[in-house]
Amino acid sequence: MNIEEIEGIHTQSSLSMDDSALELVASFYTQLYERQLADDKPLHIRELDDAKRKLLAIPLDYFSLHGTTQQNNPYQIISVDIDGNFSTFSPELLGQNDEAYEKFILGNVHQTGFRSAIDGALFKKWYGEIQLGIHNCEEKCPYFSFCGGGVPANKYYENASFESTQTIQCKYSIQTPLEIIMSRLEEAFQ
Image (cartoon, rainbow, N blue to C red; front, side):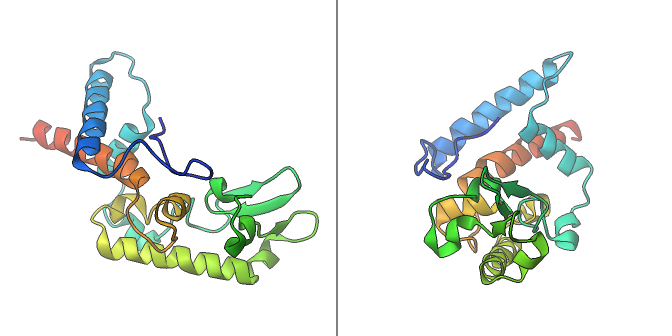
């Protein structure tokens, strides 16, 4: 399930970070979770199942020790367009119309190797900003142990900066499901 995100040409969302939107999304997730729990053959719901797995299985210092996710660690995800242009980090960025980041194209598979792209000025600028964003999240966000610094594309599209912290995507796809699962687990253990 994807909560409506601000990405690429989709520059606005019907959701916001205000309390009324948060209540609606939290209510939706809560009802969805209750239905999942009541079902004999429950549907896999990525956000809820990931939240439960993170709360029950991943050590709380996992991201503090490892510091990266697939989307903020270079070449964990490689995106290649129809012309052979490649990028890394968030796939949604490749080819977007941003001159400051050269359309997020690090090279072309017919001309440039992945390793040599790391030495380029664009990669260094971009990766440095993503690393600052991860650091900012670690410093400011109590959920860092569960997300590892967020999704670069969402930070860029929602806040116009890879160095930013909280996004709508983070609030609704990471934090809210974690709060719902945590609340339910606390009730179960009382």
